[in-house]
Image 1 (tube, chains in turn cyan, brown):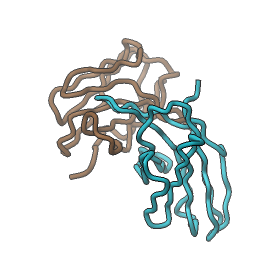
Image 2 (image 1 turned 45 degrees about the vertical axis):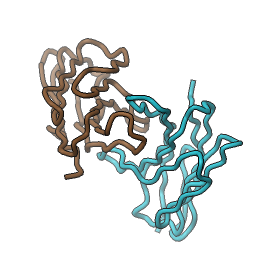
Image 3 (image 1 turned 180 degrees about the vertical axis):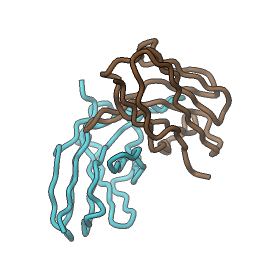
Length: 113
Length: 113
């Protein structure tokens, strides 16, 4: 059972466009929602994260929008650049000593020059 | 120092070999993790060490044997692996229970022949 559902599986965007990746979750015990960016041959790197008491968080060109009632959150990449081409994973975790991450299946983003 | 260092970067081993993967961090994190990642898939949690004690084993086959010699080091001993064990093995660290995200290493690309 996929606890965090991510879409789309792949995305192609023109340079300068907006990339939007969506995630949905079921477990209301989740209290932390990070997005990771992974380039080929590298480990995932934390991009931006949000807690459910905040509806939006912006860091540079990256914004998370969070809808608690709909149990959905999304990543917006403004002014997308070819260097943003990577795989993006959403995740969720709940309180606990180990903070286990529940991952979405990933979105492969290609930004065309 | 905000890095998780993994060695070796690449490893090819036969099914009868014994090898070890190493992970080191100097961020003072007291939780360390081993993940396995197949191509185009999210990372799969294998083991969690919290305060140098094994706290989670995600039903990993015994041919994978983790070890945490101290708070900065994490090893994964490999023996009698199968070709399907070929994957990117990622180490990560965090503070136990902290909501902020993990820091991942760049991984070891393992090929079993």
